[in-house]
Length: 117
Image (tube, rainbow, N blue to C red; front, side, top):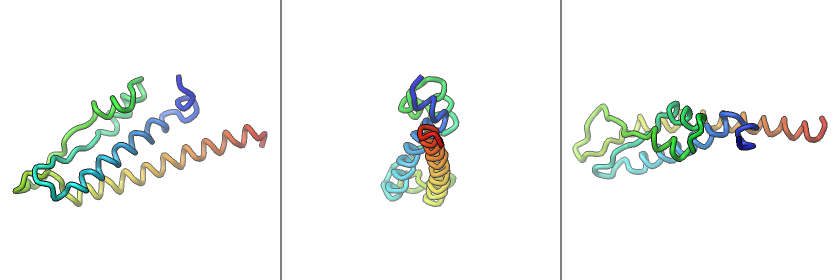
């Protein structure tokens, strides 16, 4: 078991997965006008389950990745629906920040313990 797994628990894997999901959602937004671009997303719960059961996070992301099914089809074949992507990006950003805050608090506790406070 890695030190980060012992120290941060599930939150370490969650932070890595949220970061990778953020990049994927940003790519979707950036390609909103690209003909035939297919929006992708990560099933975060599935990826986290795989990452915490021993799989590498990269493998967990690959296994949990899928294409988003659009509500309204685009004439040019692009499946990015900008409001959906923006909402998902904002929600993931909030959850990323919450996870990061948890890790920062954990590090603060460890530093206090090491200082004998």
